[in-house]
Amino acid sequence: MRGDMANSKQPSLFDDDAANESVPQRIELPDGELTLYPHWITDKQVAALFDQLEQQVPWEQSTIQMYGRPVQIPRLNAWFGDEGCDYQYSGYQLPLHPWLAPLTELRQRLHQELGITTNSVLVNLYRNGQDSVGWHSDDEPELGRDPVIASISLGGERRFSLKHRRHKSVKPLHLSLPSGSLLVMSGQTQHHWHHCLPKMQSMTEPRINLTFRQVFPGFRRSSK
Ligand SMILES: O=C(O)CCC(=O)C(=O)O
Image (cartoon, rainbow, N blue to C red; front, side, top):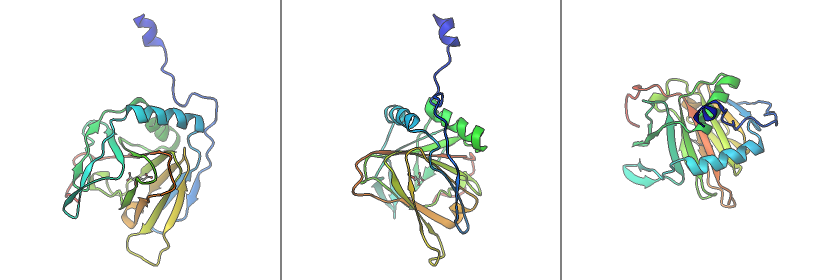
């Protein structure tokens, strides 16, 4: 019955009764701004989200250029966004996919609860502790001047490290990102800090990470 179908409300991932209680923790970072919401998504919501993303995302293992040579990245990833929100890193242009329902819900929550506007998201799947991402900054030209990166972690708890790009005397920072957490990197963080997710030999649990971003189409001036 078409009419009934059209009127029935799609169940939301965030309809359950559990309150999303997460007290923000401001993390001191010279030349940068970091806020961690340790339990932004409840365990029940994480379980549903993880399953949906694992099944629905068209995962690919991208090949990037490193020191002029093609290298397969040690993780799977996919890029979603509004039309025209193209994104490339390390010489590789990720195919742009249309939004999936769970990603749209998270995007809306970020906007409604925290006022964070985004038009795209990079989704990474770390299959186990052998998968990782090396030192880098999210400072591609199309991300604009002071990018706000909203990073959501689901699944295996992993270490996330930051090191100052110029001042060796500034101590590196190591955070543990629990499942369901949201880490917001803002201000000048991407200008002054590199971050990475190191391998973790003992980890067998998979992890999905989502970094919501705002892309300014046509802003790419040079290729990194
Ligand atoms: O998985 C993470 O926590 C970090 C991901 C990341 O650095 C990136 O996608 O640029």
